[in-house]
Image 1: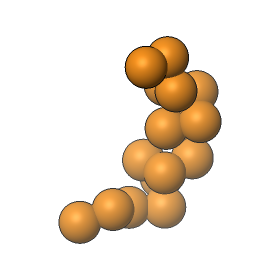
Image 2: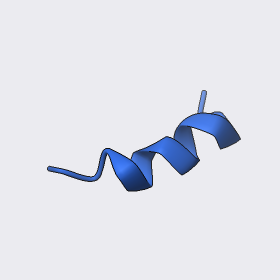
Image 3: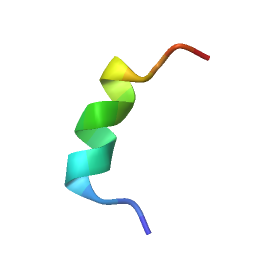
Image 4: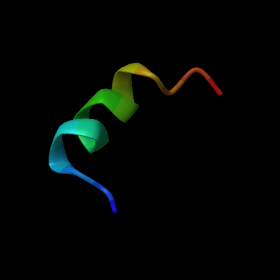
Length: 16
């Protein structure tokens, strides 16, 4: 389940 909130956060957590 991918939430729009997490998807936006992913951009900031794209450390990997």
